[in-house]
Amino acid sequence: MSLENLNGLSAFVRAAETGSFTGAARLLGTTPSAVSRSVARLEKRLGIKLFRRSTRATVLTMEGQTYYERIAPLIRGLEEADDGLATPLAAVGKLRVSMPGALGHILLDPLTGDLMTRHPGLLLDVNVSDHHVDVIREGFDLVIRAGEVVDSGLHARKLGDLPLVLVASSEYLGRYGVPNSVADLGMHRHVRYKLAGRALPIMFADGVSVPLEGAFDADSGDAMRLAALNGLGITQILKATVHKSARLQSTSPRNTAGRRVRAGGRHIRIGHAVLRGSSERIALRVTLRGFAL
Image (tube, rainbow, N blue to C red; front, side, top):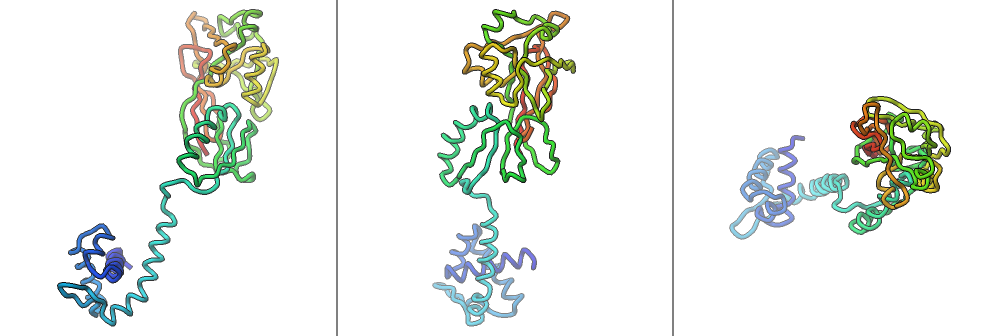
């Protein structure tokens, strides 16, 4: 059936229910003349009169009443199907979400204080862990992670950029000194992040990767921050988590030309992380580009 015929059926049903072409036009967001033309085309196609029109009323004929009783449930069913697929104005239902601990500190406040207040019909089941969950097998609807999306069957969307910084406690720097060059990093103790059992190196804007021995390795940003606070070494973590730790200080080594350099940008996907270079200051500022699955 053509779109024109469907429009004619909708105009007929609404005119029958409201008792006028004006009322039907108001419901359909069109004009009474447009409704009248649609009904006229429908009557011509069917070869019958559907309405008796007067200056005071629009009344169904006997044939029109029979046709209405058969067509109206079908039109309502089509409209209900469209409504069922339409995006609601407010989020409703249960959403199972997983995010790493470091991002949990940043996201849980706006999620619980803003999002759920504006959408009271939304139910959240939140898993806060750096463990990389199996999205499908463990039944998650949304996973927020730093890194590359390994599973090509998952959809990822960039959420934004979050800076990383290379930091150490003031006690550690007072004992071992501040690194003045990239080479100096090799003489320091490090708190490293482990992903899938492998410690990630520091990568710089020029593509240089510096594998470092770890005094403390962890797959948790919170654990890394605490280890750095307790003087175990230099670590690279989210800048937002450093603001709450006055005892952590940024380190900023220089390259061989004496310029301060910056670690390469790391991509975060709502699902995982790839290191990529920026420029100028090494330390350690990395850009995390966030994505969502």
